[in-house]
Amino acid sequence: QVQLVESGGGLVQAGGSLRLSCVASGRTGSIAAMAWFRQAPGKEREFMGSFQWSGGPSYFADSVKGRFTFSRDTAKNTVYLQMNNLKPEDTAVYYCAAQMIETAKYDYWGQGTQVTVSS
Image 1 (tube, rainbow, N blue to C red):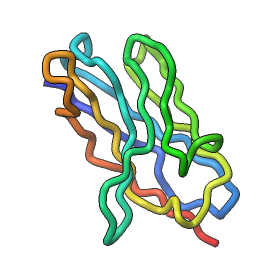
Image 2 (image 1 turned 60 degrees about the vertical axis):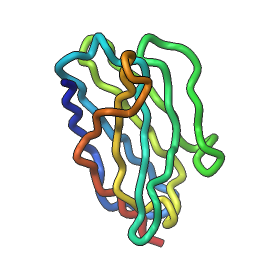
Image 3 (image 1 turned 30 degrees about the horizontal axis):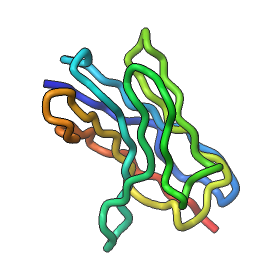
Image 4 (image 1 turned 135 degrees about the horizontal axis):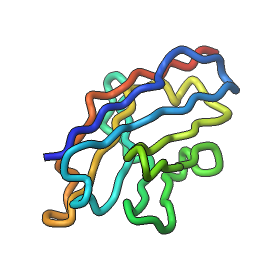
């Protein structure tokens, strides 16, 4: 089992920045990759980006490329999503997810954190 807890969401004006955190615990040694998703009201869940847990290149959806970045604190088993130049269309619930080595699937999800961008 892996537990994921997100934090850092909130209300921000367009053009502003937020940094989301995702703390992983449990069988972190079996994590292959971490990803961030978001879901806006009435819309399907959207993949935003991912990176290998052991390090390596990051991948971002075109909608956030150049504005969002990942970072990681290995000692704290925490990953961060830095969001800059936020737009109203970035308003959504943001989730981190862990892809496991055994299944190659995103088997574990956090509870989500709300991000609201006002115009």
